[in-house]
Length: 148
Image (tube, rainbow, N blue to C red; front, side):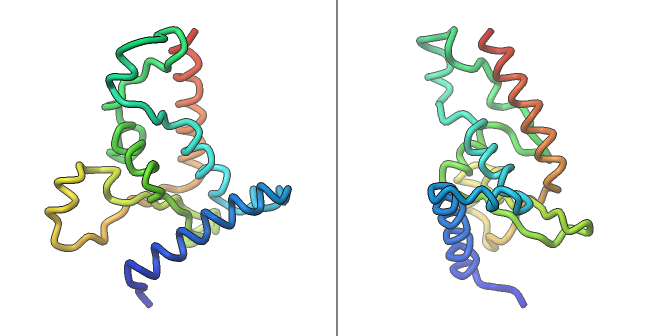
C-alpha cells in the first residue's frame, strides 16, 4: 500500500522525535536501529553554513569544504545540507539484507525551484546504510583535514 505524502511526513516526523526522546531519556538502544546512527551523523557532519560563512571569518575554525562536491548518488553537500535543515531524511528497513536504507527527499538532488516545478513530487533517494556510513566517515576526515 502506498501512503500519501501527509502520512509519510507525519510518520517521519514522529520517528525523528522518538529518536530525540529516546536519546534524552538515556535509552541508547535506539542507536541500534539501522539508520539511526547515520541520520544523527548526517545532521552533525553536514555543515549548516552558507558559502558566505565559509568564505569569510574564522578560516582556521570553519571546515573548508566545496559544497558543490558530490556526497553520494548525485547529491552535493549544499543540497544535502538544505534537505537536512528541513528534516527530509528518514530510514526504512526494506533493503535485501534488512539493514535498511536512508531515504533522502528529492530536494537533495535539485534546487527548490526545480522541485516546485515538478508535477509529481514523489521522487526520493534511497541509499544503503553501510554506504552512507562509509561516506560519512570520509566526510569526517575531510572536515578535520580542512581545519588543520
